Amino acid sequence: MNDSAETWHVGNQTVQVTHLEKVYWPQTGFTKGEVLEYYRQIAPVLLPYLKDRPVTLRMYPQGVEETSYYLRDCPADAPEWLRRVTYQPKTVNHPVSLPLVDTAAGLLWFANQGAIEVHLWGSRTPDLTQPDLAIFDLDAGSTASFDAVQEAALRLHDALAQAEVRGYPKTSGGGGLHIFVPLAPGYTFERVRGWVKGVGNGLASKYPHLIVQARGATHQGGYVTVDYAQNSVGRNTAAPYTMRAHPDHPTVSTPLSWEELDAGSMHPASLTPQVVLERVSRMGDVFSPALQAGQRIDEL
Image 1 (cartoon, rainbow, N blue to C red):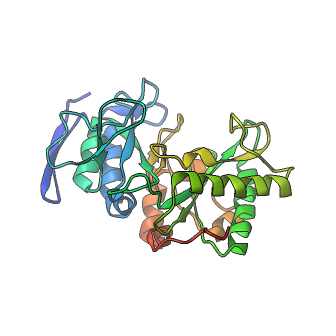
Image 2 (image 1 turned 60 degrees about the vertical axis):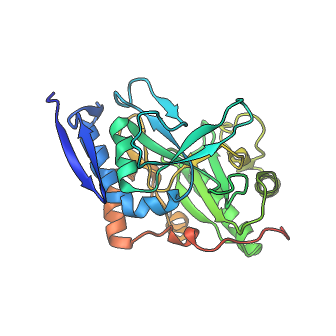
């Protein structure tokens, strides 16, 4: 393998990218260079979802078959131009510096360090204790099909519509689905988590053949669970348009329309980086309404 290195001019910054021929997915030959190129092309669509949000990066410096780790704190060697926010976790006695990846240069700098996956917080600076998203994480049980997850999402869509609340679906990049509900300011994570839990429990009571209440492990047999614990400070969820380190080939956490889910026309394994770039070129960003003004859940 050649030790390739290039200098990319990205906005007002330059980013050194290296080892572009390194194979990240041995089964398909998908390389680090292709990861970087995907993020370079998708950055204008992805970055609005990361604006002012801390992120957690899942790092695979030697590829998906080797050791990975989660990077939550901003590295000491990160460039000075990369934005940070200081946060005081309850679990440690000192504040930590969290990365804010809201430029293409920052996204590519982390990708060059080995970041394949980008996970976002449900809150933004300056107040990280106030979520502006409610997240329904629909997890498939070990024997549940994606068809079951789609059906559960459609039943959730019905419940939200009845409450006059809009949610926006995307694949997790694996076998699940995420539904994002944009919120108006003023809620605590406890309030949002309780609301998501209540909606999930209501669905489990109404559709016991399909959905079970989330207790302990969320991947339960042939059922779908709603993981409400994602709605907690410091927890994070795969960002829209992030790549996922599926073991066989790269996938993308891909926004879908409700019509596509109803038709059953899309499967997560088929949503590769190239497919997603082509979708965005053809359809635009179908998830963009999730960036609009939030909604109230006071009466729900």
